Length: 72
Image 1 (cartoon, rainbow, N blue to C red):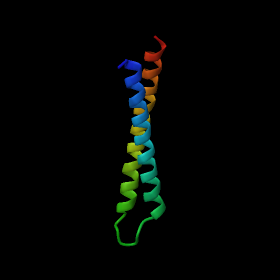
Image 2 (tube, one colour; image 1 turned 180 degrees about the vertical axis):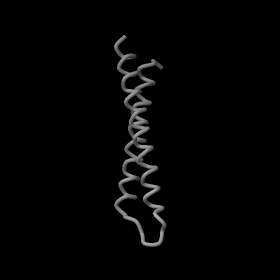
Image 3 (tube, one colour; image 1 turned 90 degrees about the vertical axis):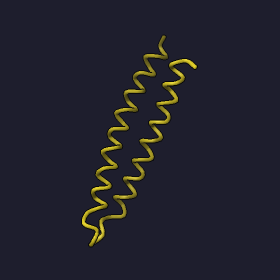
């Protein structure tokens, strides 16, 4: 398997992971916070959004590596 093919597979997987975390965070935010949960949903939503940002950075980095590997 070529390096470019492997990196493309990683780009697709990290993009799907980013979408999954994005939708999980949106669903958590859409539920709103309950009166007696102590803000647990807000903390969960915040964690999910931080994971989304990290996964987006990973995906962008992998796209750049894939581009460089596919040029040669």
